[in-house]
Image (cartoon, rainbow, N blue to C red; front, side, top):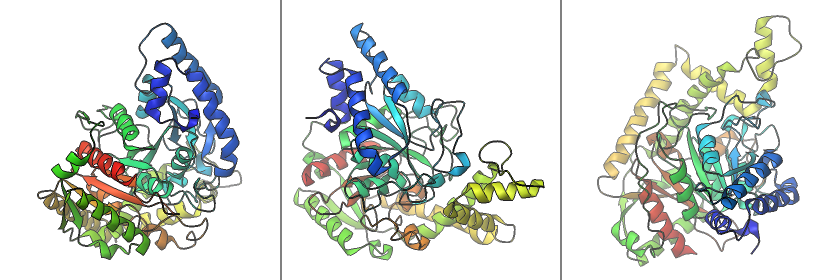
Length: 480
């Protein structure tokens, strides 16, 4: 087996046992990136020398008999809206094309402390605004399963890097479903933890009340490993929650016991989401497999599910408009060269520095927040969000987890949907509800033998990631 084929946990085990050196691992992955990324475009920046230096430090620790971290020697890709001191953070935008952060994000600090090796920064939709990684200033990423297809978004670069075996783990950010969408399209595991479980310190914000850093992995065990390392309280993040992850997960179990022990709910309102026939067929087949293994599946109701998309767009665009106001051509980021007045500097810098999708969402968000419309749109959206959260609370009184499709569709061709933003937004109708409620949600692949991948989404109670992971593991082993 080639080094790049190894799972993340196996890489660490082989390095610790001295079967491989960290440098051998890094060099294998860097060589693979050089051979493959010209066709995938998963990375915006690659840190070859930094990765090799980190590998040498790990090898020296092992040589001296010193303890190494939980991510020792594992090559990791970081979405390019998570700041790093030694690599630029572009957010996939011309606005931040050359921006260099003066500090590391909290998750980056943890990865370094645990001896993980950051290979580079991955491509993304500009400022996370998109669902296919086609709005990036640095060009679209392509799906490694079929380079004519999109890899999903906005964390598509991270998913593409992982699916093409350019890294062993990857970080993304999930606002309306970016980690889960990309995982679904690339046949991976993508986990969005509960809001507040992983520190957001150092994440360039799209929507303050929904953004959450999430993990991408090739299987559930690697996802559980990565989450358990990154989760924890951070005093620098006011939304961080001081709770233990409690992930004493028995990954050696066959999973059937977990299936039988859990009550699983499926929303009766799925038809209102406009899910493609192929996706529903794969979803229903997975449900039948769970039932065949003794799983208790019952229909539950989320009455306000049909309003989730509009609610999300109102809240996220309003918050994005406010957050992106700081990119004005004065303090940092792109600055227009040809201007005569201060107003002209503002207008030209933002016009030239932002792409079409970002401008569209800023315009919508600004309109929503105007004095004459804030009551009608923004405040009403906040009230509906509360109703959606209450729907989940009521549903979880009778079940432990919920199952939904991840995306309303399967991967599509590059450029096919880009001219129609509404179609793009609708792709996230199944992932947005968990984001609005701040719940843990994970996509796992369920259609391995089909030509196009399909994801099943597991949603758990807030701060019950272990339920999501355990059921996900059981399903993963049943559908292999």
